[in-house]
Length: 267
Image (cartoon, helix red, strand yellow):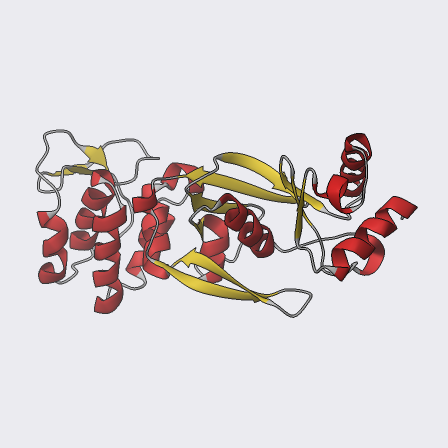
């Protein structure tokens, strides 16, 4: 590190600073605006700090071994969402993996949130931000993860029933149909899970999600009294949608749910 970088970390760590913004070093270190801009650019490029959004940088509480700062996706999200005053929850592959639905190593962290949309690279990690209305957040649980400085990050993550609904609702984004139906089939004899799944579908799913789920649960011969709230939440439709939208829409018709049962699986 050069003298300015050393001066910066001495100043930041003595004050236990976690984030810095444009203008902080002009005031705190008596730098010119150009010196500050160059310093932020160099430290970010060299992996000493992480640029979160324009004008906001994440700073390590202590210099990591090897000199490169590699924060976890949970720390990045915690700091970024707090600074944006945004609500959020983790979904997608990271949540599927956390609930042991999918053993594939997550290469991207997907986040439902109220502020950002689109793909971003932060600290060398890939994120997909999906902006949603506040009403579409919920059904989450807290996932705890340690940091290198012995803190614990508490991250809201879609619960097991909620993430299965996410997999049906957002199947085109996550490529999760018909796999999500297999996850349900594995748990169809668990009335607590099925009831929670139905509640999540009614609260956070759309009409297509509820119709597909209702038809699927009947195919699985789930207790009809459990399915009844789902049935009351949808109106009959003359338009039919496929049970598995990624397959050719042909098969038997379920008029009750308005579904083309184009499934080869025997649930």
